[in-house]
Length: 281
Image (tube, rainbow, N blue to C red):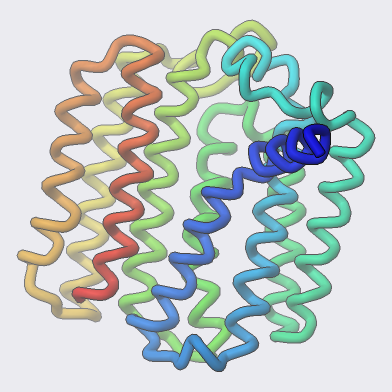
């Protein structure tokens, strides 16, 4: 019994179950509040959420598979692959999760099958190569996060501008968070030859890039709103720009691994607030 609990706990850490629940939460909120779908009887939405979660879980597994040495430097207490889960089982689990996610999507839409195949491929390239390159890996993860929201338009065969607003929100917030995580993990990444933005540019120039990304993010949201949605700006001021301003203030002062870890977690809070705001706007 104790062994089984240990394995279950390891799998929960390995597949980032909390992040998967946030993904499902975001997709259901998008369908319910932005697309006005009947989420309780829509089996296609259920299959989409499950398949997305399986793809994401597989991505976390393959990422940890390739990053064992780096994680032993950055977060030794969180390492699962090679300890609780043997490496050969991790790669098998990645394949099982990814193939299952693609197979489930075939019951929903062939367009979503294509999106899932693209996602699995990009996650593999990210884990194996892209995350060690400046900006490219950050962009890949952000793109997939935004796609997890935009895919709801594909599911229902519509173009809802509000869905795209939240997809842009998810993209930019993930991009910011991924770069902050690179700042947090600078030591381990540098030890094993990664060329992330903080390593190539240094912390100060990386912060300047983040300020620019956040400014472009705010302008993009306001522009999409002006062209398509026409919501009062007060919504964005209270639900988005105030938390972003706080993030910038804390980013200016941050200079330790603990500071960057806190900022990374705060980005998750902003994303969760963004999801909840769907019920209001």
